[in-house]
Length: 294
Image (cartoon, rainbow, N blue to C red; front, side, top):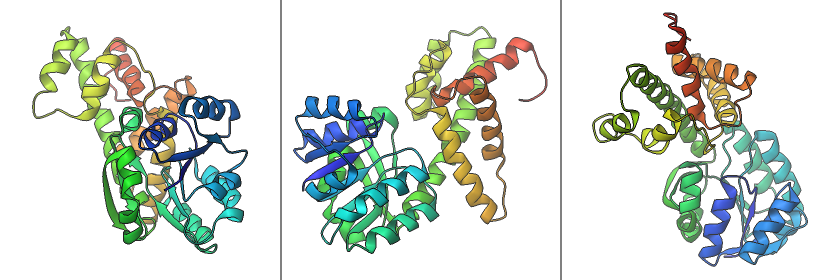
């Protein structure tokens, strides 16, 4: 199964490396050509001059880009070389309606589209431990199991196209709540004069244990916010969730509050930091001794 990857950012590069390790990667493309050339040289694969060329030489096209408009631009660029027997797997996080629009365009060529957003962050992409939430044809998801397994530890078929993205929205709302709880609790612990390495260790071994605390707790209390998942991208994802909620006539407090906090941090220049940079805002509450919530 000749596989190509479009989008070689924090997630896409790790995914491409694992596909190469499984002997599946044939071609890569990235909007920033130098990044594509460097990775292709490292992995000894071909750099496509454009998305259509990549589609011409690959059976499976994995896309992982940042925004809805980028996904549709890539899909439109692929269309001239899509045909029956080819599959587009979109691992981006986008709106359900965008996934369905992409599916409609791809199906018109005879090819198959799957919406397959992921969870696991940069670490999961690099380690081949991503979790895939797949929307689309169930038989095709099963057929592509070698591709999924090269990049991840789990793939679950959620339903028709759009179901993968709806499931990812659930994930992103939950991630926002975890971010709020962990950063707030650790800021409280630090203000209480505790040994924070010990706090992270002991809390991480009990009922409040979670992936975010384990992976980001130690770095955030030391003031390091190296991006695993950029704050600005989570803001984008939560904005999609907010629109989905509006369609249901509901506003969720966690979503509204986190968007407000993220916007403030972005305005302060922290948008390219990890989402754990929310700790900055929580810590400032204690430094100011402010009894008002953020």
